[in-house]
Image (tube, rainbow over all chains, first blue to last red; front, side, top):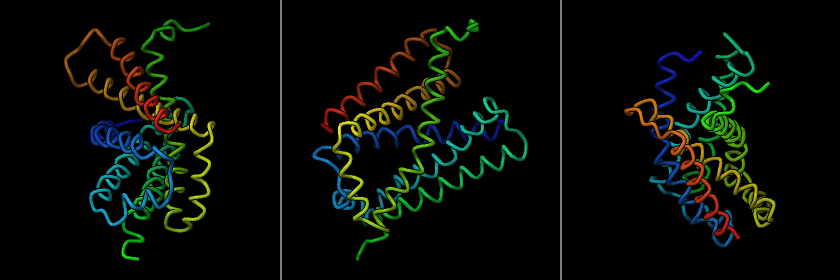
Length: 114
Length: 113
């Protein structure tokens, strides 16, 4: 169900995400003060290569990590196997990559310079 | 009958890690979709963000922050278990993961209020 490559990818993405999660938690605690607004979010992130790289790598790592985690759960708890298991896992990974990539682009470079 | 291993504290740590992972994986598409509204429909996103002033939404955010933090600390405990020399203090580490996650999520909640 999890071969060595998937096992190591799960751990490597977890190691990448640990500091990113700490950063994300800190940003959330800071940003939530006084409420949230689109203007406030964009003022912080728009046109910023640093935020693009931070959240871009976060999305890349979490897409792989979540897909592998859900793969293990689907196998162990739901009995999903074989091609169905691989297809759903890839589907989760691609869905998160596309939606996450679009979200990161939306808050960093999409409207920059507009 | 409850199987013996399922009365062990570390089984609950395993379950919490798994359930928090599922919850976060289910939340992520919604989170990403909402953020992308900043590009496609900022007015609608501002309309949604107004709901974050509601107490019930703040409580839900508190729960999500707790789940994220406990998944991270629990994951670090698991990787330490797998890759570092064995330590017999696994229950202490698991309890610390929950305590730290509670500290962080409570800090978030207090700032949100």
